[in-house]
Image (cartoon, rainbow, N blue to C red; front, side, top):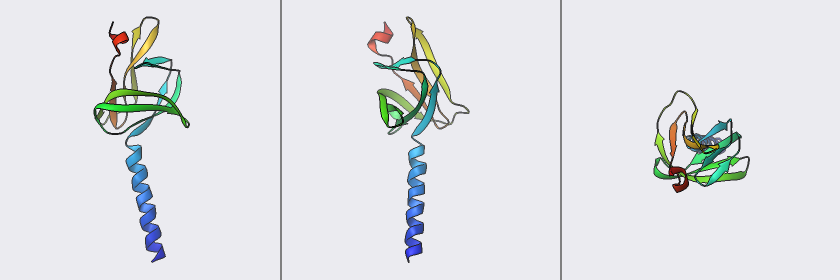
Length: 115
């Protein structure tokens, strides 16, 4: 009976890990970017989101430190590669979107970006 309970617990943990990984990915930024009202320095970040949809919050973290929380449209979509899309705004870059293996994140321009 103990073996069955342990097997079920291990299976549940595995399923939770797989489910959680579908809503997160690692993104490498080669340069500092602005997204929403936040500036994110060049580096590697874990990006997570709750559900696909037009009003999803995307969280950028490094280790356990939350770097930015920004609104985005998230589409569940299979992409062949991870790609980062930016646009030049003044002297800097604005993050417009990220294609991940299992999703596409599109960030809305802020009022300041749209000018």
